Length: 309
Ligand SMILES: Nc1ncnc2c1ncn2[C@@H]1O[C@H](COP(=O)(O)OP(=O)(O)OP(=O)(O)O)[C@@H](O)[C@H]1O
Ligand SMILES: [Mg+2]
Image (tube, rainbow, N blue to C red; front, side):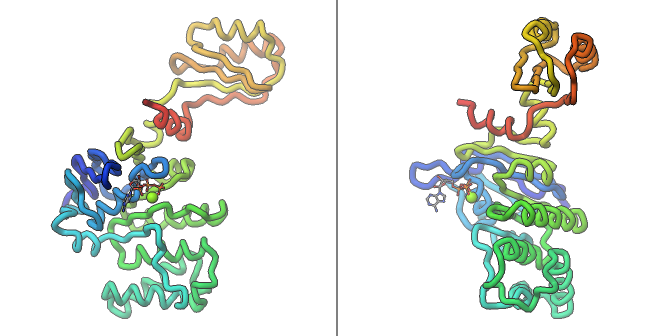
């Protein structure tokens, strides 16, 4: 058994003169949540369709769970689950009947089908609504059911294309929590696209950033953040005088100083203790409420990557 879930090598696909996916080489290990980030039209959905074998690559190749996407797309679709743009639910059927229908499509034996449906509906907090027809459900509830549908046959790998888009913050958080729990319990690999960087940071052990079909960066969110920006110290307080700011600016490890109301943002050349700086500021009469050390946020990393020419 290979420990790699997805491997692509120079995978490319164009539509006319649009290069939707451009020489994409990726190695995604099993058992992680991989987050694929990129602006609208950057090639995320096209990549998923290529990986599922729903679309032929123009050049390059991809293997999913050891199967080649060109020659074994049927095998790939059997052992993966996918939530694409369309939730794939029958509005007139009840939640239970929707899953029942898909359970038959997947040829799950009746006892297994019933227990899996119950388990997933319970996990998603939808068991008590199982007899209601899905047409009358809110978007968030349908989205949860669609995720349950993608996981019904217990595939070891699932593709979720923007699962929380359009959900209110509470529904999105609930779906994220449930996803996290199911992933931890069942050990599945998830290929997720999202425009929500906080979500990506929370759920993903590895993140890939794509722009115009090209992979710009890949790594653990912490590593991306650490590689992207200089370390910094943020001090919230009152009483920063121009003279004090000049003094902070003149310190050897300080590369820049910005003041914004009562927030002082100090960018450093390298990681260092904030204590000596804070001590001098306090002695000079600054009233300090809070000191935070940190590196760039994932959003800053993302925006910086989008700006690179
Ligand atoms: N079937 C198609 N025919 C023609 N062009 C297509 C087709 N599918 C995708 N494209 C083009 O490929 C590019 C990538 O599209 P894709 O849907 O993969 O982007 P995305 O990253 O999923 O965007 P979004 O965040 O908006 O969902 C776009 O320029 C799009 O117009
Ligand atoms: Mg898309």
